[in-house]
Amino acid sequence: MSKKPTKKPQWVIEKEQAKKAGASETVWLFGLHAVRDALMNPRREKLRLIVTLNAQNKLEEAIAAAGIEPDVVDPRKFNAPLDPNSVHQGAALEVKPLNWGSLAENCIGAEVPRVLLLDRVTDPHNVGAILRSAEVLGASAVIGTRHHSAPETGALAKTASGALERQPYLRIRNLSDTITELQNMGFLVLGLDGEAEQTIEQALEGRKDRPVALVLGAEGPGLRQKTKETVDQLVKIDFAGGFGSLNVSNAAAIALYASRERS
Picture 1 (cartoon, helix red, strand yellow):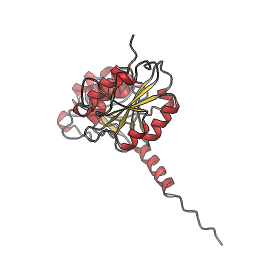
Picture 2 (cartoon, one colour):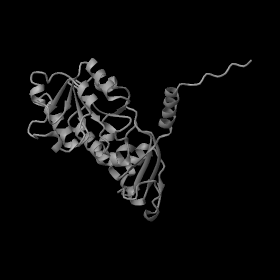
Picture 3 (spheres, one colour):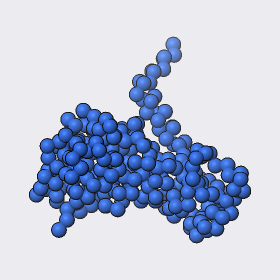
Picture 4 (cartoon, helix red, strand yellow):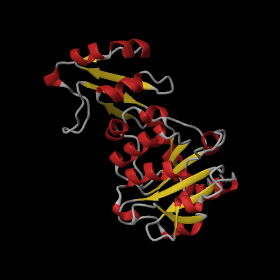
């Protein structure tokens, strides 16, 4: 009598499906700046480049460095699968999403690490702007969740203006677990909330030499209750009065600057 095969648990099936979907996932980047930076990034797996003759001339060095053969098309027949409103400037590049590695690989090693965590920040333009600020201000990583956060897209890459290729952007399964993991690494985790009693500067007085992680919520809803309960402390931006009055990308830049150790 043959043995009946054991049925896989649902979570195993979902994990296998997610892995398969991730392996086949690709992203179309567009715009001269975003495409050039991706072509010049040796970490980026490049699949297909579509350009007009004018864009090919402008990207000549980057195309040669990447060793990719472009599809040169008539501007009137630009056939990359992009949103019709995308300002592509005659260049689109299909790529695989970047793999930055583990949390520890990205958040340990800097002299005084600073990390940004995003609690359901879904707008790709906001996340792109946050990546730009994070790169300029020396953040070790920007971290969002796999669900309910902005994935790599052409719009995000264009807003990031090249930072997507250089600034680690990790997407994790569970934000609260990641906060706990950072705390175990020695990070002080601060959640931004307009109703907090202390400012970032007050909370970090005498402690700016510590690794710090800043958690920002989406505009409107702010931080989820579970997030508020998991962070070490809630803080607010000093001069803004109410955190809710600031765009989240502006708040991220101000918070990151306020948290830095300066002589």
